[in-house]
Image 1: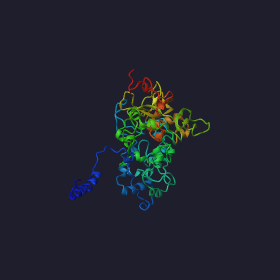
Image 2: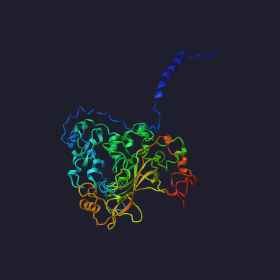
Image 3: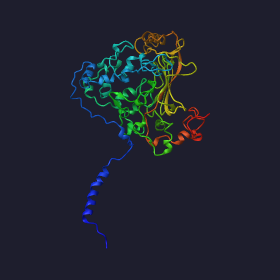
Image 4: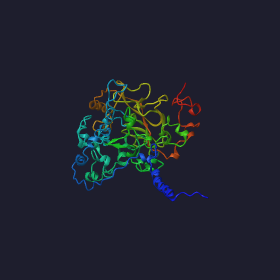
Length: 482
């Protein structure tokens, strides 16, 4: 005889099941950080149509800024605390100087257009301030809020452009530009960063105008997913995350953009690939080449300037000398811990035993914080003072500048007058090298480097230059035991 359960017990069990199943299903589960990269991207702010808010008219660009500050009261003050505005770091101690120094575009030398002080009329078109023509060299008043250019980062680039000395270009309709403002786009950021060093693609190698509207093969983030620059270079109170190695000495990791900001470790299913993460940067495998579509400048010889041999943007300009541009560039791979070992400043001695390093990335095989990282190396022949032993920063633009009279001696004497850097009356030419880390033009995962690209007989890495006794797939381990 089968045992029957009382009806009331069956009913009670049914009630408990109906009650507990939803509770169990909704009970919070102990989980780690999300592994979905999309969870780490910022939400884009809701755009506010300014066409009905801003009416004008505006007689000056400063009038636009005053109008912006009526609602965004702290915006100018926030901008003025950023290196986008100051072009300077806080004072830092460096081993090759006796006193702390600030490091920024005002006291640096580069091996492109050499210095901002030599060509303020053009260089300052990429500074977010107006009225550089109202101040003497190195005398700009950084405390004037009305001189903050809100439009360069926020206006529709089809309606706004900067002209000389950071002022709006002739013919700009300030009302239309102000009414168009919104979240910064790739066009806003790229207007300066894609054209650094004197033109499209000149400086970085991994940043050029092909990234305005790229396909996914050129850059998977911007091409396939339509990333804004600020999706990675996230911004708080106008402080933009991400610092340029070429313009800094040391960089706080908290201020830098990292792949792991979104791609939580370990990022690969294959543990053999994850085993590389301690020694190989993500960029090394996922950026096989840069300057993929637009060429980048890799060599510049200023000593050849001044000749009437016919100008060609990619090979020779009378005002600038000889060039070499390259496309589809395979990076140079070196150890890098995120900082510079050295950054040349105005007045520093040149290297008499070889090329002078404008910057030298820090890191080595014995540095546990360093990883193998891809770089573009820029090689330049530029002027120096053989008596004083330092690089010279000629005045190039304007009356008396080299581009006006093609007289190097006059350009250096004008430099001494304006900047106070003594000039012996003699000049010569020396080779300089500058390093740019490659972090853009990330290709789809299926295009990443494979084992044989590095470890095969024709691998792209110079193992001995990196400090290994040979290919580590044969030797094993990170550190050279020789």
